[in-house]
Length: 430
Image (cartoon, rainbow, N blue to C red):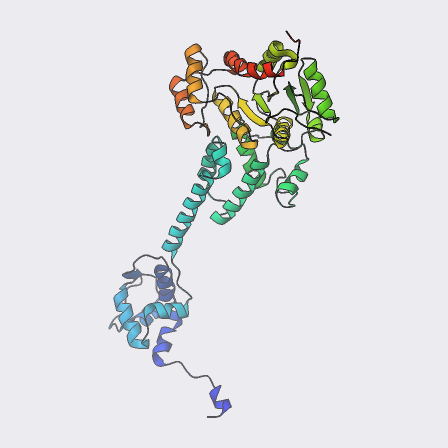
């Protein structure tokens, strides 16, 4: 055989020609769809067929009369006919004539498994566990479903949102600068109107227990509250009893106010640019942190220049408060936090413990029970979320349904501070 003869196309075998008749295309298309469903197929119905299509089907099946315009053919009958004509199976013929078969049922199962895995991953993520209030946000994400129909795309978006939440409060950076720092140079990833921005703002609204922002002004205000697009002068934190060593501005300011028995209002600029700064106490100094300014005021009134180091977050800590606590911890301080025994107070405590190295200070279920016993007629605590440091606390608070604000346990806190104050009392002090 010459090379020319080898390239001459050959006519398909008679059986193959039968299978490739254009009139049978509705059959193969319907079979492809049914066999790609991933479900058992015993019979296939298709049509309506015109007369030529009915004749082609009758020829394939060896019928002595035309089938109905909408025939329902057993798959076994088709298998026998196709095998007799071509020696192949229906699946092989359909794959060749139409394309690879799918498995839609299997794909649906896979997608369902991917989504279940996605929501489980989100629910147990370290950022969500550290601030249990975010479990409510995770539930709203799950209710909204995956983005663009893809669990993979949704996980990527959620991963970015969790990165942002872990970095908050910000450092008074403009939003694009913050986004570029946290999200690998993507300066516009958090621009107003982006899916990521909406996701993070919904999380912040959940954390702060506010309604999701609706206007551009409300969105800016929420970013500012989280320390982004803020400025270095508006964010302040109250400090008392801090007596660091050094010639830096922060050391001189706090030491001067401590010696005068006064509190210091530090701006974020003071904290970000402290200058020379060393904590002189040995062993490791303990810095107590409270939620309410009245506790700091009572401590200063009682201990004066001997007041132990005390930081007040004034409710939700802003960027100045968090940065100061981190600065103190970096210089060797051990942080101890106390706040209100109510729903928001527990969320604030979880936030502080997550963002800094602070540990709870008299914030256990046992301390709450003792406080309620002394103050049984408090207001309702509001929405209660889990306290990661004491899983019993939320349950006990829900059982008693009573809030105990920090001022009502002030004497207990001041007794803890008294021993430290005694050690700091200068010679000759009354």
